[in-house]
Amino acid sequence: MATLGTPSNTIEVLKKYNFNFQKKFGQNFLIDTHILEKIIASSGITKEDCVLEIGPGIGTMTQYLAENARQVIAVEIDKALIPILEDTLSPYENVTVINKDILKVDINHIVEEKNENKPIKVVANLPYYITTPIIMGLFESGVPLESITIMVQKEVADRMQVGPGTKDYGALSLAVQYYAKPEVMIQVPPTCFMPKPNVGSTVIKLTRYENPPVEANDVKHMFSLIRASFNQRRKTLVNGLTNAQEVKAQKEDIIKALGAMELPLTIRGEALTLEQFARLSNLLLSPENT
Ligand code: SAM
Image 1 (tube, rainbow, N blue to C red):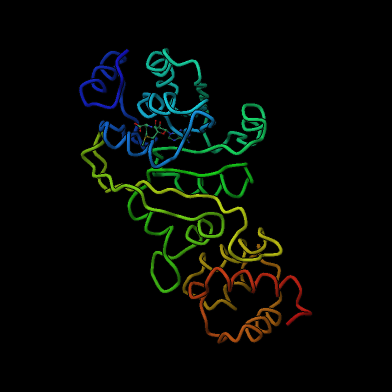
Image 2: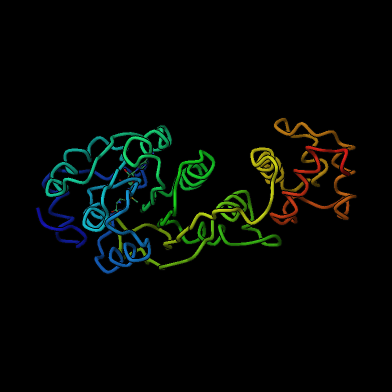
């Protein structure tokens, strides 16, 4: 089996297995060896590393990962791709393919079993329809991980890096910035994929902080405030949080907390920085401090 990553070798494999692309799984396969090499270089993987790949497709990037890492765990939802992966990955003994939906896999268990609970690196050309739940899930599940190097839709990469005052600012921006340092590594045009997506793509590297940049006494609580604020973007923070079922704060405590933070009662959640959400969360958990 030839090395993948070129249009002709990709077409050969697809024809051999009579493979039909499934739009619902966000299948756009990489066909550019330069981009693949750049992704591997950006991810900083070494022969010591255990890598989790989400969505290996026909195994294009998996081959590069297998060459450069100690071990690769690849999770693929589409069962039609499994015989293809068995073929394209047959030269590599350090790859395990799991035929499951990544959102239903117990990644903590995999890391415990395959990497003695030491931090893994995640590298993926993500299915764009579930980018946000995958990233939030990786961070919030507390999986031991060092970095996530992922191809996402260009506008999602933008969303991960912005602060208050832009329309792209949201729960994803705050989650990424609480857990990791985001760095844009590569811009990838649609021509590097088969079939071509309708949008530009960006490879972004999220390097997990050892210590998050703000102190939240209860991270889950802070993110429930963040979610509630952005679910009701048009409302003032006071009304948004009072109406939200997952937030158990009393209206008068929210008003007192905003007073202690010297913020106007008319402020919307989308105007708060990560630091302000952390402070608000801490104050609401201990209203006696306001
Ligand atoms: N890594 C390959 C490449 O770069 O050529 C394929 C990338 S393609 C954008 C996304 C892959 O993720 C597809 O193979 C798709 O079947 C798979 N996928 C989609 N949803 C998934 C899920 N929930 N869990 C695991 N894999 C999924």
